[in-house]
Amino acid sequence: AIKECKWQFRNRRWNCPTSQGPNIFGKIVNRGCRETAFIFAITSAGVTHSVARSCSEGSIESCTCDYRRRGPGGPDWHWGGCSDNIDFGRLFGREFVDSSEKGRDLRFLMNLHNNEAGRMTVFSEMRQECKCHGMSGSCTVRTCWMRLPTFRAVGDVLKDRFDGASRVIYGNKGSNRASRVELHHLEPENPAHKPPSPHDLVYFEKSPNFCTYSGKTGTAGTAGRFCNSSSPGLDGCELLCCGRGYRTRTQRVTERCNCTFHWCCHVSCLNCTNTQVLHECL
Image 1: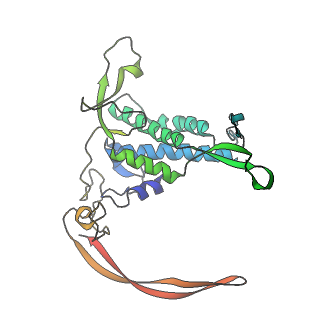
Image 2 (image 1 turned 90 degrees about the vertical axis):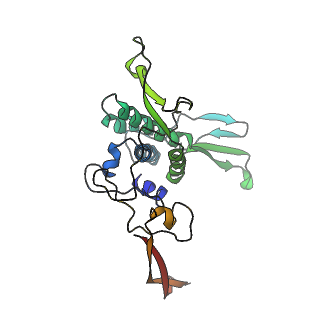
């Protein structure tokens, strides 16, 4: 989850920094902004994905493949093989990840919602894989099973939902007959917007200024970050450096190149020295 978070935000002002301490993502996890929402979702998704895959690989004694999909599935295929156990992964994720959330305030509801959104993303991105059976390589019959998506695919979906996250407020239905869970819920801050779906990420406060260092919010700032001088996008020097400008320097890098495989069995390479131009935010 940490690796995926850093990949998805590698070109953003907030690039998913990590630190030593009880909260590896730092103080941002105690806020209610978009970045907090993504952290909770990707972490929950990571637990679900890892456990579901471990079940099918036989790494966990208490679970196996999902064998409930059995028998005919279509006119020319049937269920078989070893489906990844997404249901066990989601159940474990709820018990393991959600158990740390206490209370019934807005932050509690936000974190639980984003945890579930992460798990649902793993579930909704599962795909059917099949293997052909038949004489001479023909595909007269297929055996199919359900396979987890790559975690990069999960990260891509959650990143899109980060960009379209819904800002919410604490709602109260005001009914004495409603259960405690039903009574307190999330509503869109803007009444004209539709309520967030279970797949959406939600947040309730504006993101801090990630341009400069702040010990209070735990933001590192963008000074010293490398940028792309020719890009008009978020990785470009104008946006990433927050208008402060940047310095340019060159460095010589020696790398292996022109490698040749020799039978049998070794590889010989030349050493090539290239000059790299680096742009660094002030």
